[in-house]
Length: 483
Image (cartoon, rainbow, N blue to C red; front, top):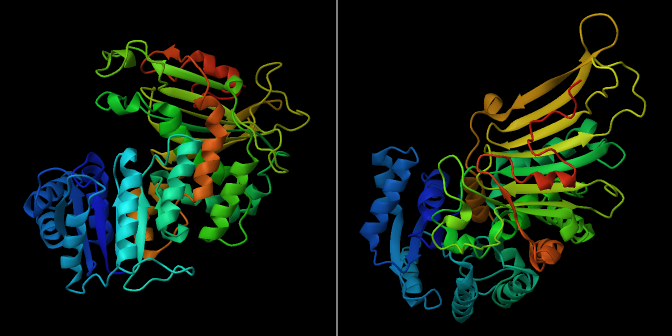
C-alpha cells in the first residue's frame, strides 16, 4: 500500500466512528507508512481521538488490543476553529511528514457539512499552491501526490453543483478529485459490470428488444428521527435518488466501455445520463410516512414543521433516448420506514410473442422471466423461469435460479474499505466525475422546482399506493402472475 497521510475532516462525527475508522483499520491496519490526522472543531487531543477510534473499532468487531495498538500508532488530531482556517492542520501534517514515513503523499477526506466544502477546498488548494504542491497540466506534482475526497451530497441542485465544481477545478485537477458514493464501493455493484459484460447470454438480451422494464429499489426501515433538522431541508430525492439510485441506474443502462478502466466506465455512465430525459412531475410520486408500529409520524419529529412537504419516499420513472433503451421505463424508488430493508435491481424481460402453453388457470398468462440483482442484504441474484408442472397438459410453474454471494465467497468487504484503498492507489473508477454529478442534477431539476405534495403512507408498508400508477407493484416480492 502506498504510504500517505490521510487527513480526515469531520473526525469527531458519526460517519468517522461507524464507517471510516473501521474501514481505515481494515484497509491499512497492517501497512507501514500510513498515518491518519483527524480534524475537527471539538476540544479533542491525540489521546481523545485514539480512545474514540479504538472504541469504534471494538464496536465493529475488532479485538480491543489490536484496536488500541493501531489507534495509538496511527492517529493524531488537529483542532480548528473553522474549516476554512486550517493552520493547525498544516502544522500537524508537516510534523508527521517530517519523519519521511508518508513520503509527502496526502489524501484530504471531507466528511463535513456541504456548506463548508467551498471554504475548505479553497483553503486546501491555496496551501497546495503556496507550497509548490499544485500539479502541472499532466497532473504531476513535486513532493508527493495530493487527492481530495468529497462526501455526498455534491451540491443541492444543478446550479450549486456547477458552482462547487468550479471551486474544485480552480484548485485541483479532476484526476485528483474523488466524489464518493459509497454504493459504488459495494462488491455486488461492481459485480454488475462483470455480470453484464462477462456473460454474453445476458448482455445480448440487455436492450429494448428483450427488456420490458427495469426497477431500482432501495428500501429502508430506518427513519429521519434524530437527523430531521438536516433531512427536512433535503428530502429523499436529494438524499438518495439523485446519487445512489442514479449511479445504479447508470451502471445498469450504460454501454460496454472500450476499456474497463476509470475513463472508459465514467465516460459511458455520463453518456447514459446525458441521454436521459429530464424527469417530469407527471412521472413521479412523493410520499411521507405517518405513524405506525408505535412510532410517531415524520411531521411529529422534533425540528420538523407540522405542515412539512418533505418527501420520505420518492418514485420516479426515467426514459433513456438512445438506441438500446428507447421506450423502456426505468423506475427508481426509495423510502424510509418501509416494510423491509433491501436494495434490488429488477429486470423484467418481455414475454414470448405467442403463448403456446396453457397455464394452471384458464386465461392466466405465465410470468415473464425476471432477473433480480440483490445488492443488500443477502447479496446475489435470482432468475425466474417457467417449467412444466407435473401432470397432464402443459401447465407451467415458475421456478428460480439463485446465486448467493456470501455462500460462494464469504461476506464481502465494506464499501468504504474498497473506496479507501482505491483512493490510496489512485484509481478513480468507482468515483463520480464532475460531469456525471451535473448531469444527475439536470435530470431531476424539474422535480426539485415543482410543488409536489407527498402522499401519506403508513409505517411498515411499501409506500403510498399512488406510486403504483408508475407501473409497478409496491411489494417487490409480488410475482407478476399467479399462474
